[in-house]
Length: 425
Image (cartoon, rainbow, N blue to C red):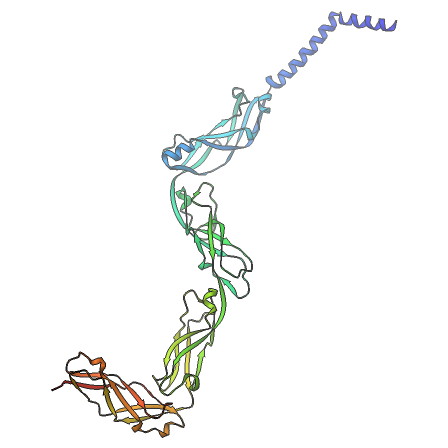
């Protein structure tokens, strides 16, 4: 009985014109509110950080050989007014500030206007641009150039004990890198720098590395629009051995003096510290300052000599010269007037005669031997073989001096004689 009553009431409501009128009014109100909220009311919003882009950039580069080398701002702020629905569909990432470069004809700085590009989902006719900040974009238009720069490098690692790296000896492949880009940027570059790091190195090695660009004050430069012929460089790092090497003088026995028995060397400094390739230094135990013939003089006082290093060897201790003197021990010397002058190997068809009557010869010998030597033991012999083909005349000829009977004695100095050549009758 109650269920039938409820059905009867609901039926009367549904059949009521008042109910349907009220329902229609509510629906219309809801639709009106939705429409006015999305299509009728306007909304103003500022979009920050809108990216600046370009059109016609490729054509400008290809036909005029010019590029945008600098822009005063990379983003702009745009204030838009439109329906709530359209504005709500936009974000800063959806917008672009587009600069048209198609009318550019020459390099230089200029102020360019831009247009706003909208996403395809937005009806641009419903959007009004009420403010753009800044309203223009400053651009530097530059000619493209191509230049090459040398590659340099530094080693910032560590070496094993007894080894070293000289950055100035590093080599690079390629030795130069070539860049194409705006002239204003290329003019700032002086070189490309590679930094190599490795720990406890003990032998030369090669490595591939990236480089940075430096200006004249060694400041790092960063340019995004340069094109390089290579992004990496192969660096060869020579690792040198460090070694202490003795300084010496090379002696030739003579004049009655033996380097092994009669000479004490005084050299300052006695040694130097050098660096070089291991193969070179392995066989380098001493460096000779000079070649000295002991028959040239009675005394060898202190003299300064240049230190001549093998190719590829560097003196780390800094010395470029050294001093050396010789002290002769166990020897004595004396002068002898020698009249025994003769010659050998006279030229065929000539007669020869020695003009000198005698020669004063210095003889040096062990102190216990010298008193037993007399002038009769000494001969001065000229070899005339070098005069073959010469004409009649007087010639100065070198000699060999013999101290007969005393092998440990010798003469100091040279004793040439004058010889007269005449044709045989």
